[in-house]
Image (cartoon, rainbow, N blue to C red):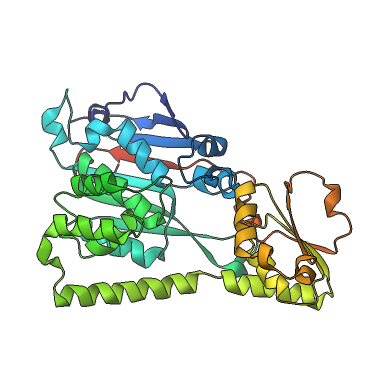
Length: 387
């Protein structure tokens, strides 16, 4: 078979590029190469951060949070990628091909490449999940900042998977596992997600050594949904003593891992120490969010004038609640003020402050030359070729 028959499986013509409107932006499908020897299909997402807020279906006020405007979602493979795979390649995901039905059930030499995949757990976790599925996995880690190597590695990787498998199996694994690696989803998880997991996990998830881990992350750690999914997946008897012990160990390992990965407390303490060392007494926290740094500043009497500013009204409301401003003493209340505003504009209300912090914002700013997220899948005839 010519490699261009991949187009019959994906239901996308290799001869032309196509674009599709999605609620969060645009998806583009095109073929960088399409020959009889090798064919590559690429899916490129152009996620619109403003659309993420405009169409947000989360709890009241969440859509206005700054993190919904400024984040890594436009540049990484996340649950947005899973949604695009489902919408654009639905027939291929289900193992159907009207023109080549026999080809849809045939194992092919395939290669899939995810350009920027966020993974909470690192390379070891990637391999722990992917290798039992029969993939040859190549992982390229990305540093946090090439200009500051001492910052170390980020949680982003370029991942290449190679296997002799059906296109439907490859797409199914990607659909389920991309948000598992990211450990996040951009939409609410409810009962229908259990049905999706069972449907797309049929034939492989029940036998996977990390099925409990995959299930919990896919369902955003909602215990009741995870329990329901596991009971349907492998039966009521899955909670044997040995199984429970393995789950307990995994939970401890995950908690330990996440504790090591979280540098938030250390970062807050380091900022307070620097401000104290510089003799600062009047400080403004730009993009203060829910007030984590403000709370630390209030603990130190040195800081006599503390200002928190955020673009999100909802974040300011949460900060007011969590700092218990309504129950503060009058003297303490005079030390802190919350205002609505953006650090992208000049603001006279910030005049006179000795220092400004941006610790909840700076890591979300896009570096120059950032590119949208992409994934590609290729096909070629013969076991010696790659796709």
